[in-house]
Amino acid sequence: MIEQMKADIAAFKKQLKDKGMKGLVIDLDETLSWTIYYMAGELAKLYGNPQNLSVEELCERMIAHDVPFWNIEEIRKWGLQALESEAMAEAYPIIEGADKAVEKINHVIPVVGYLTLRQTSIRNATKRWLKKHAFPDEPVITRPNNLKLEEGMKWKADTLAYLYPQVIGLIDDTLDIFNYLPSSYKGTIFLYGQTDYPKSELNIIPCKTWDDVYKKVVGHKASLQRAAGNPT
Image (tube, rainbow, N blue to C red; front, side, top):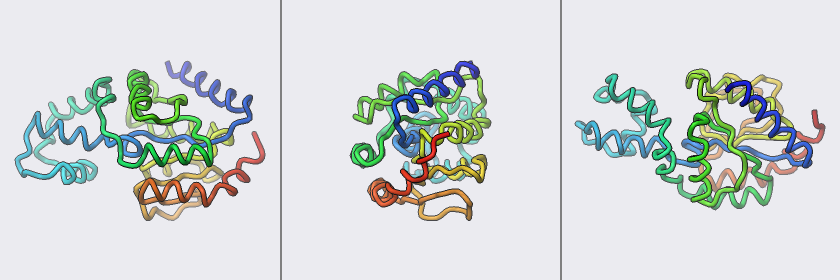
């Protein structure tokens, strides 16, 4: 399956190159969909919320890996199964404003696809979710089913670097990818939901809101196009 995925990614890059297209890819979880918010609510229903925390507070604690009352093997198994569930993938709430911002961004720099750590097994469900929320109908690049989640970020970074300059940048919410991208990477990362980031040689543009993402894309349009001016 990994070899097939490599072939699919190579075909995606070639298709963009043949069309003379260059553009951005977008992450999904916590960038377009509020995945952890939905999962926190489901966990509270199924396993209780003894501290009576709000869903927002539960999300913060989950991100910080600080929910001791949910730190049991049964819940960890549920979480892994949930991440592979088509029904869950179609039920996630959209992050407010993401759809309108992406629509506007697509008129400035093309959105050519989506790059996610979600498994290939739920790619079709993910496509249905994107269609339901009227996001651009573009390819979804997913983590191979037999690649462990903990190996996913390196895979994602390697894929992003390989796709340059047909893919000139990424909109993503996580800092983790910076640990795996080569310092020579010339693409741009629009870091959604962040106002700060560790010092880096990479071209990182923090954007607190989706409105900020749109404004930053507009402001950096010329530099984005210049950076991708010499195809490889």
